[in-house]
Image (tube, rainbow over all chains, first blue to last red):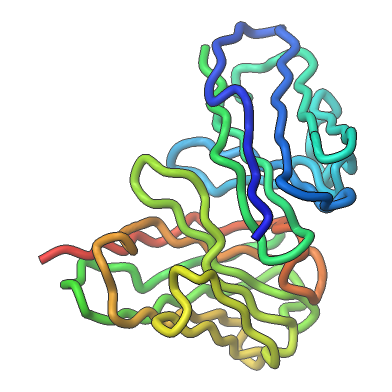
Length: 105
Length: 121
């Protein structure tokens, strides 16, 4: 199985900040990497698929990039609705998620 | 508008069984793979099982293989998860998730609100 790690596990930020979350795969997964946002009590939402493609309806302040087996989610200009937990997930083979990054006020 | 509505979660004793359902609407159900993903209390997301668009191919996480069975009724736009031999560690919110393509590893582009399964004596 492909193992996914994320850093940091949590971070504190303010409205308007630029936030970067990193995800690393235990082996090459090409661009089979997706990012999700999960707020407590809500359905998870797909933000980015295929490492850098923005899912329909997702604000353009969210972006994704890849460097080898390292992947980055960037939120440019944090909004109140963005305080949530973010998960990366590989879709190279049987899906696995990273442990999550909690973005706190 | 895509809608996924899970049901069937309950409090069940260890060793017990449940059948979870997910009613889908707002898209052509027969064209997409579907999955179940769970979140245990205080933990992250864990993929549990997936099924291809036709229902021919099914896939399971090692943690549930042999105990859980995924199926779908394409005539009724419904996804199922039969969960047997339940353990305390199966306690979680179970989400139904739609894939972006017919293959089970496709990204999950829409999710339901979840149904809670609690395994306790």
